[in-house]
Image 1 (cartoon, helix red, strand yellow):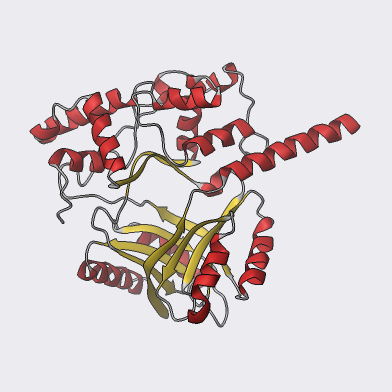
Image 2: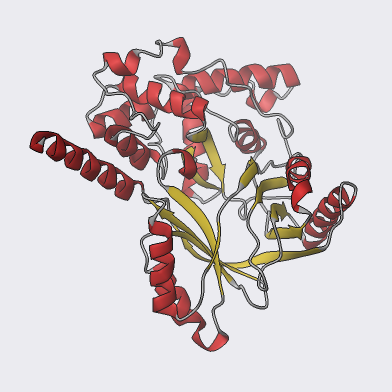
Length: 381
């Protein structure tokens, strides 16, 4: 794979997909870790990189589209509300009309065209209140005249989206687990900064949701990104760093780092493989398939009788048709070694129809409304 990237850029992409320091000057700490790792591995091209050059290179990679963004990957299921995958049929003679109607919903965060004779449009619905999913799907059905099939996640086996490029640190990146907010202050710093704890149901406070909304599309590309976010929100910089570090540790944020545009890196084959395996075997099969290094997402989802017989989803990405086919065959062989493969298919992505972040602002507004309603009830009592 030749993406036209320099050795230094390849090292940066490989190094920071897995994490980035949550400290006052993260680029200084990250550059130091990269220099040390480069020297250990004998890569002279990265053994002298400094913080300013690291920032410049990441900014350039972001600007030219090699990166989708630099910042956190938010786990939508862990920040309150819910997100679910939905499939629908868009008839050929009404295809654009159906897609436009779906995309007009603010609750639709992602929408992809996929190769399937019936369910050819796949989108994500993200809402603050899980009870709203059925209402949104009913509205979509009324607008499109097509029945949507809800495919919520029943079990998550893997969410990785790691796309290495050939070059330094391709296999292991850099371990930055000991370079973070924990080294600067203790877990009580949020309370010391005057921030209320999260609610008893482990939901996020309005301030925390405001923070997620501020960073979900990326961090500022400056030497002090966390302080810049803090200034935007009117919060102490220490609170922002501690909160993001805590969210990473508890799974509300999957990781902070560079998020590659996999198409720009040559991963052009995006295949959603779907499998009908015995229900009693789906956990063992899912865990085994998820361990394959080229499987980026793996879930159990429900079947829909007469329409959708598959209960295991595994996303693979390849840099050529041949590589993609080989990886899919390896998944099939892995499953066949464990249980019966009754039916399976691969739905390749043919077009991105919509791609936006989850509507965190809506969730924050919902929580704020809930806080106000609770306060009014208390006053009336």
